[in-house]
Length: 90
Image (cartoon, rainbow, N blue to C red; front, side, top):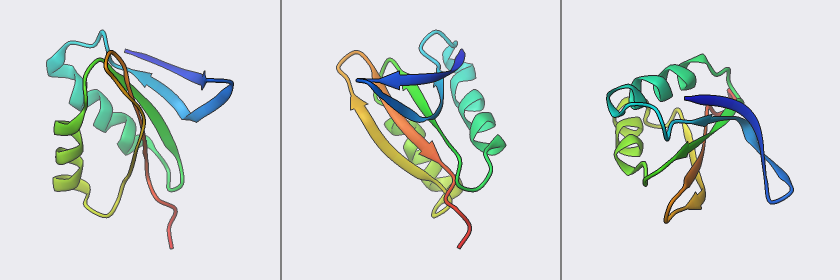
């Protein structure tokens, strides 16, 4: 797992970058949810993965419905980048 500040196409990614492409599969979701749970309201990070994290999105919907933001920034075929964040308090 790599956590860095990232840029893409000359512009900053959202928040820090969490690259889980080399993280063992059984540790990916716990690592990602750990990072999400550490966010404050209004913060986000960019997830970098080697496949579409659609199952992760379903898990977020089940566990954090209405309490997370999800935006695809890049959709494969070899790299997927998703901005995941906690909404600001209303």
